[in-house]
Image 1 (spheres, one colour):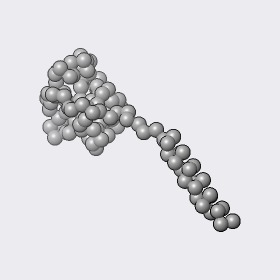
Image 2 (tube, rainbow, N blue to C red):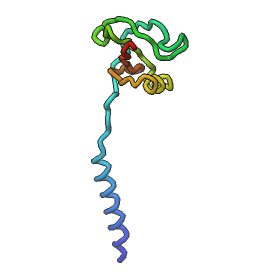
Image 3 (spheres, rainbow, N blue to C red):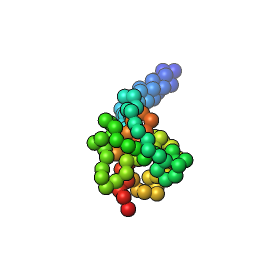
Image 4 (cartoon, one colour):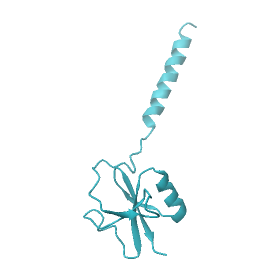
Length: 106
């Protein structure tokens, strides 16, 4: 009976370790490269908007569309959340600091 408690404790510890080993960590959306050179034209919704209209650079050339604005917001910012809520825009790519959206002209 003295060994019962340590055995139960070891069984619980073994189970916890086994479950911990099964947990996958997601690196989706994580970017390790430095931010590319970007050309910011102006605030997208206003001059003070953190989300910026982005011009053409080597990084953005394949992201630009003649029927939409390319907009970059600081990743995780309130401005990004409000842009997504207002426009329904989906993320097209991401760098370390910015998330990019293509917003069709209306």
